[in-house]
Image (cartoon, rainbow, N blue to C red; front, side, top):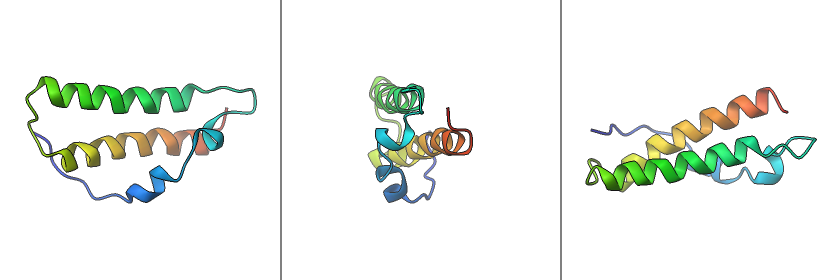
Length: 76
């Protein structure tokens, strides 16, 4: 079952591919962030929506923020 987490969704939404793409055009982080979103939705649907849409959005947002934080600390 999903447990809700509190995060600032606006922070994640404000970061674009432009800000996450490395100097050499490395688009690994945006690709992984997109994959996390798709996989989270796929998992949620395949498991008959075990939690609310808001809860899965919060969990997915937390995962993507962690990826973005790593990229911002260690840009490619």
